[in-house]
Structures are given as structure tokens and as C-alpha cells.
Length: 123
Image 1 (cartoon, one colour):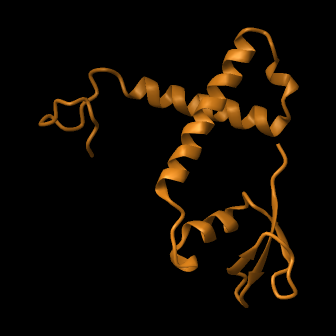
Image 2: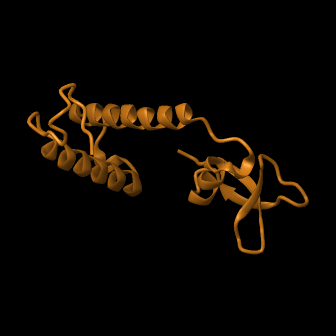
């Protein structure tokens, strides 16, 4: 997947202060849309509005759907994990390991709050 390029303007400290889809005379530093600095800028109050939580939540859910889809394709021998780019392989394996660790930890008898009977975990 190719990341989309955008253009940013940074202040003297290197912090993004403006963003544009196209290069402009004063906004001309090219960056990847998914760069951590860009995501932080878009998620901050700097722009005057916050990226909707629903959009971010939807992205996280879609990521999980894609992970599950890739896992099914691998299980059915439609694709091989090794056919994916190394970065994708590493990320998928890392996330699978983390999910397995969390799953092993959160068994049916896990209960952090004895006063709560609805199945949720409260810290």
C-alpha cells in the first residue's frame, strides 16, 4: 500500500503548524500522510477541530478486519505470509503475538472489579 503524500509547514522548533494536499510556496515540505508527526497534528487541537473519534475508531476496526482477512487467506493457502513485504510480515506477527498474550491474560475468570457483573473490565 502506498502512503499518500502531503505537504507541511513547520515552525522553528520543527513542529507542524500547517498542512496542505498540494505544495504551496509557504507549505512545501513533503511528508507521508501516515507519518507520526502528521497524525499527531491532525489529532491535536492545533487545527481548531479534532479528528472525530469515530473515524479513528473505525480505522482501528478496519485494521482488525484486514488482519483477520489476511489470516484467513494464509490459512486457506491462498497467499503465504512470506509473499508479503517484510515490514507487513513483522507487523502482522507482532500484533498476533500481542493479541495472543492479551487473550491468554484475559480469561473468562478475569475480574478486576468484583462489583461489576456485566463482563467489562474496570481498572
